[in-house]
Structures are given as C-alpha cells and as structure tokens.
Amino acid sequence: MTRIRLIHWNITEAAERTSILKSAGYEIDYEPFTPQTLKRLKNNPPAAVVIDLSRLPRQGRDVAIRIRHAKATRNITIIFVEGDQEKVDQVKMHVPDALYTDYNQINKALRAAVTNPPKVTTIPKSIFELYRNVPLAKKLGVISNTTLTLIDPPEDFGRTLDELPRNVTIQRCLSDQSDVVISFVETQKDLSRITEIADKLRPSGKLWIAWRKKTSEGDAAVTQTTVRKIGLSLGLVDYKVCSIDANWTGLLFARRKPKQA
Image (cartoon, rainbow, N blue to C red; front, side, top):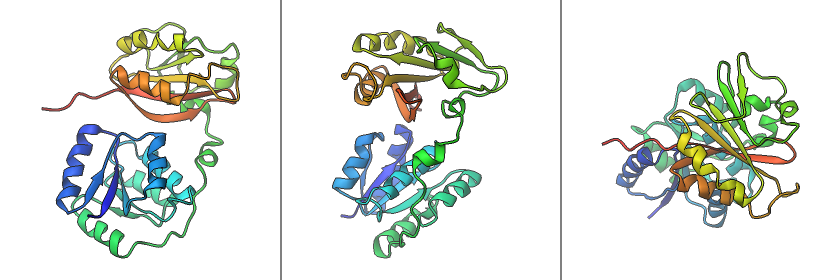
C-alpha cells in the first residue's frame, strides 16, 4: 500500500483528514510534527507529503522548505491542501512545484503524485534567509495593544527586542493580561516553574520557553527535547521554534483546544 505523510497542526482535525486519505486506499502516517519528523522522512521517504494549510499556513510553508532543502527529501512530492487563498498564493511563491488542491480533489492529486510526480524545479531560500530581516517582536508574535510578560530574561534582552509595535506593555510577572509570555530557563530546576505558568496561561495566551543554545553557557540537559516534553506533559502543544538571538532559542506553546463532541 502506498504510504503518504500528513502534516497537520490540530490532532482532532488530523484524525478526520487521515480517514479521508485512508478511504482513498493509502497508508497514512501522522503524528504531531517535531524535528524528528524530518529525520524519519529522510530515513524512510513516503510517496508524498500532504500539508494542510487550513491552520498555521506559515508553519506548513516552513516544513515544505525544510523538505526541499534536505537532499534526502528534496524530490518528495508535496501536496498542499485547503487554506485561505491569499496565504496559499504566498506559499506558491516559495514552493511553486508542489501540488495545490482541496479535499474534494485530493484523490486526483494523490494519483498524480504517485503515478507522475511533478519535477522539482526550485530550491527555495532557507528558513533563516526568509526570517533574516524580520523584527524579533514579529517572530515572537508580539503585536500592537498586547501585554508581553518576560520571566527571568537576560539583562540585555530589552535591547535585543529593539523596536516594539504600538501600545505593547512589558511586565515581569504573569497576570491574566499576559498575551505573550517568554520564560527563560537555564537549568532543569528552572523548568519546574513552567507548571505554574501553564496553569495560569490564559486560553488564548502564547508561551515561549527559551533555553540557551549549545554554543552558550547553559545546562546541557535543557534542550528542545526536554522543553517540548515538559510542555506536552502539561497539556500544551508546540508549533513554532525561533532563534531569539545568538544565545537563546525558543519553542512556542499554546493551550491544546478541547476536542469537540
């Protein structure tokens, strides 16, 4: 049976999409996306990767770019499904040789991907190039009229943030006004406080857990893997990683949406 890999950012919706794809006669791989996902794609490439753009289209685009940049996965057919047309058009600018469709036409697209895969004609700019000139506040999701909460930030972090959007309030203690929280952790002991932060995080709040890069002085036991593990154990879901500066990397979490009955 032909194997297809589904990329989706919502577990409940992914289960529904998986059923649609399975009914077309394909074996479907799905799991929440992690850095290990790309490693598995390299070691065992599927016939095609289906990326759902109905949620987090920018993250879907970034996954596709990473697939194209790795030699082992470069020629895998990418199929983008659904999504706001304006966002889809932006994705096409970076990955023009993918297939674009919706779930009503997905069977046709999958047959084309398997029997006559499109030739890869473009290697898009790397993720780092795309974000090189993007202000840090924008990468962190800090927008106008919001409250940014910094927990144990490095002394010079104010300069790192540089210019902020209009009417952004910065505070050092978590409150019910906190829209974006950045918690800086240097040791495993620091990770223990994430439980309290997660409990107080507002339903629409965003939580960045930032840890020191390997090139900086920090606890080697605090890595992206340990940070993700603590977040997931608290019922959060991660969906974005960001290089904050030369010393810090952050992983973005949000509350997992409850399953609909």
